[in-house]
Length: 342
Image (cartoon, rainbow, N blue to C red):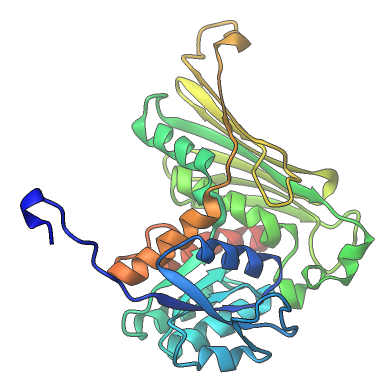
C-alpha cells in the first residue's frame, strides 16, 4: 500500500451478474455494452431461441427461470412492449435490480403500479432505457440550454420517423395489444422524452393521430403540440409515411438556436449526428448562414453511457438520475394526454 505517496489501491468490487430477457437486436446491444464495462458480466439469457454463439452464458427458454435464478443480481428487459410491465413487476418482487427498455408500460396508471412495487422492493434499482438522453449531441444541447448562454428556451420542433414496408404487418409492433400504440409509442416517445428533458413538464396538449395509409390497428402519424407553464411550446411529428428514416430536433432560444439533425445508430439509417449552433440571431433582416457553428459526432457513446449509469447506481446505491421511474411516469402522463386528445 503506497500511502506515503498518496496512492491508494483500488478496492475490488463484486461483479454484478446480469441476466438479459429478450435477445433480439436490443438484447445484443445491451450484451455488448455490458461486455465493455468492468462492473458487470452477463451470466444468463432468456429467449425463445438459444443463442448459438454464447456457450459460456446460461440459456433459459422461460424468463421466470432467469428471474428466479439466485446468481442473477440484475435483469435487463428487452422484450415486446406488452411484457415490459409484468416482467418488471416480477423481477422487482424477486429482489432483482431492473433495467427495462421503453415504453415502461402502456399508461401512466401502469407506471404508478410499478412505482409502488419499486418502493416495496427494499432498495432495488429501477431504470428505463431512454437511450436518446445519453447521446453526446443531446447532452451538449442540454448543457447549452441550462447555461442560458443563448437566453431562454422559447420553442422546439421535433421530427422523428421511419420508413416501413409490407413486412411491418407481420411484426408485433403492428398489433396494438402487443405494442400499446403505433409510431408514437415506437419512436415519438423518445422525442417527447427529449422535450421533457429540455423544457420540463408540459401541462397543455393537443394532438391529431391518424392512420391514413397503412390502416393498421396502430397509428402511422402523430401531430402534437405541447405547452408548459413557462410558455415553451413544442411541436412533434412522428411518422412512418415519410419514406425515409429521419431524426431532427430544433431548439430556438432568445439569442440563437440549437439544431440536431441525424442520429448515430447501429444501422446507420438516420445518417450522421450533427449539431448546428448559432448565437445572437435576432438582428434583422436575418443573420448569415456563415455565422453558424457546426459540430459532428462520430462515435455513439450512448449505449455504454446508459449501462454505466445503471451499474453505477447499483454499485454505489445512488438514485437513478436519467431514466428513473418518476421520469417515466411524467413521460407517460404526456403520452396519455396525446392519445386521449386524439
